[in-house]
Structure formats: structure tokens, C-alpha cells
Amino acid sequence: MKTKRILWILGAWLVAGGAMAEGTPTGFLDRTLQCEGAERRYQVYVPRDYDPAVAWPVILFLHGSGERGEDGVRPTQVGLGSAIRWSPERWPAIVVFPQLPDRKVWSDGAGCMALAALAAAEAEFHTDPDRVYLTGVSLGGLGTWQLAYEHPERFAALVPVCGFVEPAGHRGGFVPDTADGPHAEVARRLAQVPTWIFHGAADPVVPVEDARLMSAALEEAGAKVHYSELAGVEHNSWDPAYATESLPRWLFDQRRPAGGR
Image (cartoon, rainbow, N blue to C red):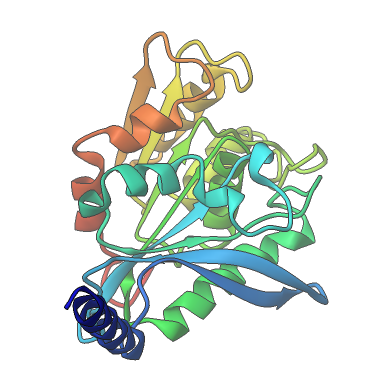
């Protein structure tokens, strides 16, 4: 009797597994694409209750310098990926995690990886083109400003975390240093994109002054900007940022204007 029961449970498990395999896989999924003539690994997070009949919001997450490599997994282990694992119910979205190769920055040619991975996820899953969001931490915060600056029409909202802006000519720099300064130039381009900036007040790696300048420039440009300076927090401002209770609600409420920008 015990053997028959074990066989029955095994058979039921195999049937359930087969039925699950027929649907859309969920969780953190391995993906690859070609970028600059090389195969690049990345991951896409699909919520457990994903329904292909629904147009889902999409978040593009840009990791920091410590998550660079070739494995495709590290970008999910710091920042937004960690927040999703702790509280998946707060993040009902398709989330794309591209990865930079070692020693690369998002403004290098390898930055094509981010938009290519985003486009691939949009083609694979049923997503809402008016609810595409961009966020990143540290080096990925710089990448967030850069991609948004270059493609302001692409994103419904931005969440740069401990990021910074660099003028062209600097490592990772992307924006012309105009007479008004690089922050004013970025703000001019992003005045119509709702933005929530997070930065640790005690950050020893990326000085908080950059976030203050960027927030002030956006306000001056008439942008819808939230600025959260986290008292006593050092460089790891991503954990408290993504744990902010109102952040997902605010983010998913943002939509591109009809017809884009």
C-alpha cells in the first residue's frame, strides 16, 4: 500500500508539472541575446500570477558596478531583485535585468544590452507600452539618467537610486556640459518624465550633493519630482528605497501621455 501511495503521489506530481510546463513559466527566467557580436545572458522576472490576457507594466533595472559579469544572475541579487524576492506581491510587473560585462559602464556600447533586453521582453510577454519604467542603483543610477536622457519618450517614470550625472568626456559621462551645467541639461530633457530620486545622506561613494543638484534642476524645469534623502544611510540606499511602502503604488500609477512624449 505504501508503494502504491508513493507511485500515486509521483504520478500526480508529474501531471501537475506537465500542466505547469504548458503555461507561461514564471519567476526569474534565464534569457540570452546578441549584443555587439557577443551572446549576453540576462534575466526576466515574470510574476507568478502572470496572465497573457493582461497588459503588464514593465520595469527595466540597471545594476551597479559590483554586479557586472557574464553569469546573467548577479543583477537580480542586489536592489530590486532582492526586494521582489522579499515581497513579490508589491511588484506586479515584468522586470528586466540586463548585465554589463566586466569593466563596462552603461554609457559604453554595451549599454545596447539594456534596451535590447527590454525590447525582447516586450516581444515575449504582453506588456503595456505606456507603463514602462526605468530604475537603477549607483552605476545603474548613472545609467538611468543616461538612458532616460537619450530616450525620454520611452519611459513613464524614473527611479534613480544613489545615482549621479557625468558630463561627456568623463568615464561614464553622457551629457553635454552646457552653460547652465549638466544637471540643468538633463532636467530640460526630462521635465515631462515623473521622477523619484533616492540617495543616502551619508553616502561615501557617490556624494549626495549630486542628487540634490539633480532634484533642484528638475524642480526648476517644472518636472514632477520626488526627492528622498535618507538620513544616516551610506551607499546602500537601494534596500530602504525599494522597501519604501508607497514607491510601487506611485510607480505603477505613472503612464506616458497619450501618443507618447
